[in-house]
Length: 516
Image (cartoon, rainbow, N blue to C red; front, side):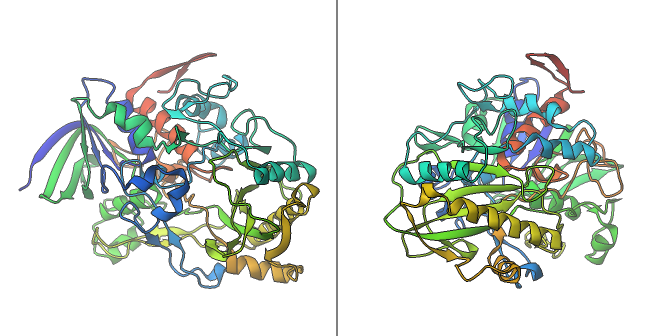
């Protein structure tokens, strides 16, 4: 039975951004808000266990996407986990809260996202977090997401921290503060030993509001677009197909894959591609689904001279640095207490790994529809290592990781290098290792980027070009990926989106920020 419903706002996708938007927009009791999530309301108990996040891939709370074969990584088909549950990827990720350096936000404005620089986004990054004891000029003190380093200490992580300092990387007391560059301690969204997802921080406190309707196991099939305006959505539940109409805005927060997929299914996207699938073109926007990119990562793995597996959720080091003559921080290193084999397959040995990742890749790929059927997974092509500059900079990152691994602080733990292995020294050998070993860092962005040029998808107020009452507010709007794990940035984007939509004036220590 088709049941028509009317709301002021419809938020499509209950992931990180969707939870923020639903909570913020429903603060006005006079506004009716509908949140639609394709996954379940809650996942398995393991979802709250900080140590169990890797085991969530491929379960019911994961979309379990796969890429097309990647020529740059020897034809590998990569698994691309994305959260399919309230909280989205914040409910299945590694819980790291890392903004990255301010330079990667300033790059957005330089690329045409007017008004989207670090200083403009900082009040909203702060608004999302509760980071007691930090500098209030840069950090939030009363936001929903509780952010802190791990509480315990482990000898292996203290040694890694010291090794990074010995290798010449400067100490940074707060990598989410004035600068992201240097050696600091990772911060996590973990509260009382349990994961805090965006659903926990934002949505659970709001879900009892009478003006907020949360529908899970609800898959949006298409947008209703008439006369250049988005009027609502069609979605499916176990009870059948339903329709919801909107008085103000439909806000897509379905993520870097789901948001462009839904736009294209609704006739908004590259005209030739849509017509080839028999989809009527409403607005020819060639940038929809383009500009897909991710942080490519690889590892330097060592066997250990003694067991190093940690038993506590301890503080762990983070390094953000520059390779060669890079003008901005472009390489991140984190550490893990197993000897990771290529493609993130743990080995049987005692050991540890340095995961290094390129923070500013040049390679770009795409998301395209496989068919006009909303149930058909889209074609995902991140185009890893297509640009040779990425390969060379990844080689630089590998050298940087090896330099840290060789420092005296790690001598009590160090045994043989397992990967790439002591014989892999030439540039050709290291390039071959990377093409075998690079994999996703779970940080895809960019498929509905902000801008005003012909390949952009949304304007600086996140409105879709050519369609009224339709916005996108998630990782897909980033023109380029940040130099940190992306969940913290998505929280800030969604906070700012809510303020843009409502016309709010956000009070800060320096005065009022007018956002519209």
